Length: 332
Ligand code: SAM
Image 1 (tube, rainbow, N blue to C red):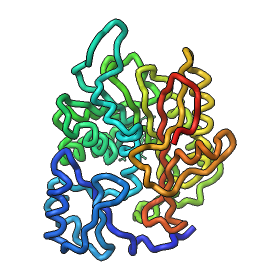
Image 2 (cartoon, rainbow, N blue to C red):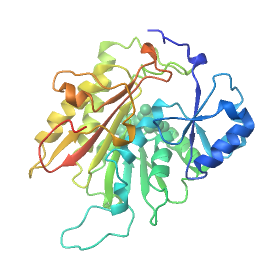
Image 3 (spheres, rainbow, N blue to C red):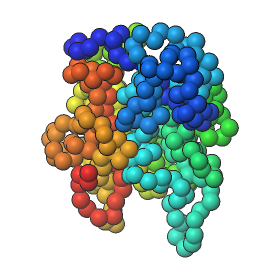
């Protein structure tokens, strides 16, 4: 497929890294560098600036050099925003899940796991969201099983200000991590952005040829499902965001539908995972599609982007899940 609008004609997107700068500082600096009329704040996705496609010198902007602003496609900002603001409250302020018999608020910060983290754009984005205006430090444990990629993540985290304990990089296979891991006792949320076909990426020189064989797609989807069901098996986790930069239903809605069935079949005690439309992405127009095992109402909870149908950003998919006590699907 060919994007309806050439990527070279898309706006340029940058994310303000609130670990190091504020939105107003970035807006002021962008206006000075690129001209006042050329700078807009994205209407739906917090802390994203939109600049004209004609801006070509982003890498020369001192805020980019210092890691205060990150060149990141709009679509790739959706996952951390969904996880951070999905339930409409700063849930991490309430601390780790209550231990039996303990009263009052736990003052230790919460832990989130970025299960497939490198090179770390979403890790640092999540760390920024959950540490904005906080009294305690909330940590993101960032896993990747590829040692070379963990090194890239470490460099990135250093530049973006996540190296002061806010982000903890770990070279590890997520499928081998278990819920009893002592570093994860305050875990509340998992961001899962696993390897995918990349069929939505159209503006990168590293673009993967999306004419993937059916066999490759099957193998990717089976890993994605395994990883999502594994995420659902951590009893201390209440929130999960699952994303891909693929536009293939097999890697997106179909994985979500199967994971809900498998993950919920393993839950006991009247608990279940359900899809929720992220409150932080209420204004996002393009939604998921209904597939076998997913109702139209559930599909409406999912967010998509599609460059082959007019969206001026790469193709992307995100689903946000919450653990609930009572049954009921498709809250919107
Ligand atoms: N979330 C990243 C970001 O926004 O910068 C991009 C992640 S990339 C799509 C997927 C990553 O998952 C790769 O770096 C890959 O090495 C890692 N990965 C694949 N299987 C894994 C596993 N079983 N455990 C941990 N990491 C894994």
